[in-house]
Length: 136
Image (cartoon, rainbow, N blue to C red; front, side, top):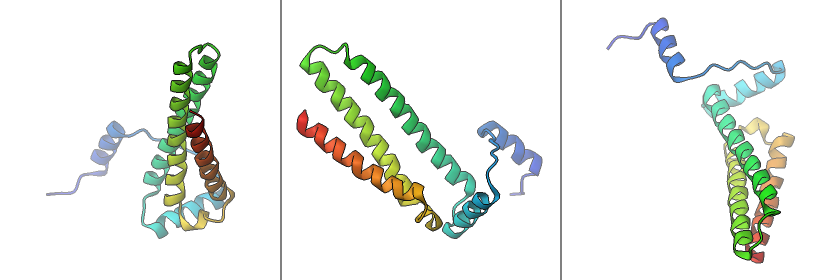
């Protein structure tokens, strides 16, 4: 089987993917490129995963805001408990996304504040989820 031409690859990629351009500081780009190479992963794959996790957290935050607004109108204990279970489930999704970040972060990010904060977020979310479970 022959190799596909660059034009054919570009047509295939343009049908399957959306190109995103980002401007970052050179030192951040270099560190990310080095970390991806050291981990043996593609930069595009890692950025896609980070973007998917960010989108999941953003959607979860949006749903939490909607649920919080609705809580004022929730009058029965059954509905309040259901709402708390829903919020706890969303918090679990956010915690899981943070854990994925921790587990998949390149070595050179382990000393970065974002990595250290992720560990704290997981701990706090675990506590909140546990407390919600105990209350309801």
